[in-house]
Amino acid sequence: MEAISCLISRRSVREYTREPLSQQEIENVVETSQMASCWENTQPIRYIAVLDEDLKNRIADECTKKFPWNTENIHEAPALIILCAIKGLSGYEPDGTPSTTKGTHWQSFDAGMAASYLCVAANALELGTLVMGRYDEAKIKEILDLPENYDVSCIIAIGHPAVIPAANERKSLKEVLTFR
Image 1 (tube, rainbow, N blue to C red):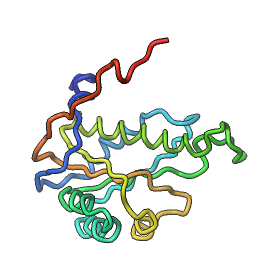
Image 2 (cartoon, one colour):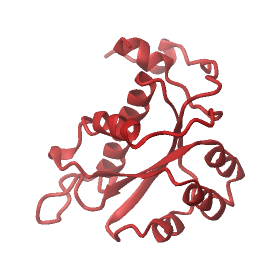
Image 3 (cartoon, rainbow, N blue to C red):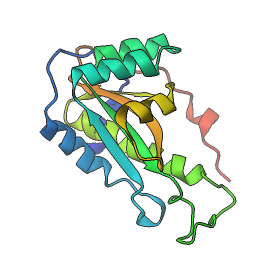
């Protein structure tokens, strides 16, 4: 798929076929996602692929109960990617002092870049994704037994789309672009 077409056609998918994803499909998507730029090539992003149906449903039921729309979206998806960032790498010097006044901003920036690459890579491979940001991070870390230095940046549902929604209307260039 041509790059511009792939970027423009990517959608948030909420309806998937029941076709399971293979480890190879996940590896293909993550391998591309790893190419996202990051702070001083620290490569702070880690991916936890949840293919086990019972574990995925446990995350849905125990980690998103305050956000029922996410619970439903997770149940609908055949797999999840829990995208994490290792604390203290992005935006920090090797001795642990902040490199800029932005603090942990760069960690979020790196995670966003990785999530974006992951979603576009999935689209290029004819997979659908949905990025979710409402969840109980402590509970996810407990269920998945994640290291203390991992911050959960987002949950990404992934699978073969059953329905690809239409694009939402975008603001005009006059509203979003300024030349100086």
